[in-house]
Image (tube, rainbow, N blue to C red; front, top):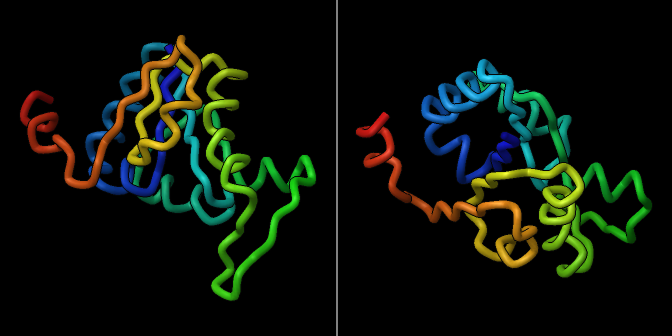
Length: 135
């Protein structure tokens, strides 16, 4: 199994849940992909500090820097690009990597996921208490 996890709004919401989930999946021989918008240099330390292990890491911003996408940065340091380009990138990655299950708190990515990937939408304050009770 290949599991994709977003960071902001997912992992950082209930890190203990995703720490255990990721550990169990990796122990099972599965892949855990961190799939985030921000730069790896910014997000990876957060994920490690939260104790969530992973086997792969993908940053939308880093990827688009690598392929020379037209991007610009605002005065707060946030990177921007054409909305369609940004929005489809996570789905393109999931297609290339064969991600089976993607957990994200941004519904706009769902339409770009391959048919072979189950997209789990976790809106703010989603069913975490229920999931933790089952855990």
